[in-house]
Length: 98
Image 1 (cartoon, rainbow, N blue to C red):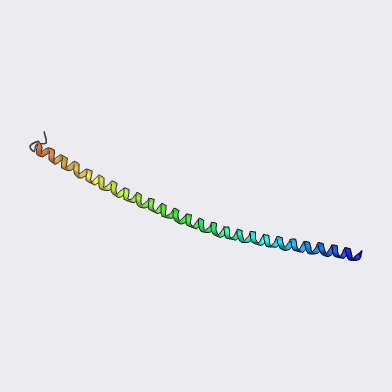
Image 2 (image 1 turned 90 degrees about the vertical axis):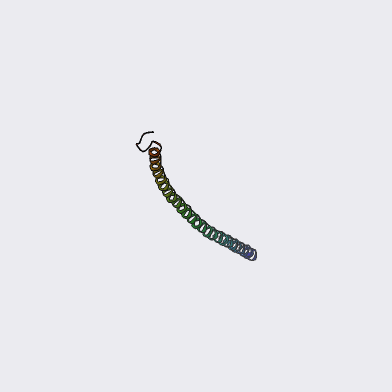
């Protein structure tokens, strides 16, 4: 009877150790996968931040170009107004009337 109890106890201990080893391997794989996912997420966040910075920078460049274009258009408009006044005077005989 002592032998069968010893065999049963040994079998239980071996089974328990095997399950602990299997559990340890599973936890190790999960931790490795978690680390890989965190690394990948960090890289994706860095890429997204860089892309956002590029897009924001491009937007600012476009805004600056639009400001310059607006100033140029205003300048052209002022020159056309002056030319229009001069043409009106020339067509009116120089007295300012048509």
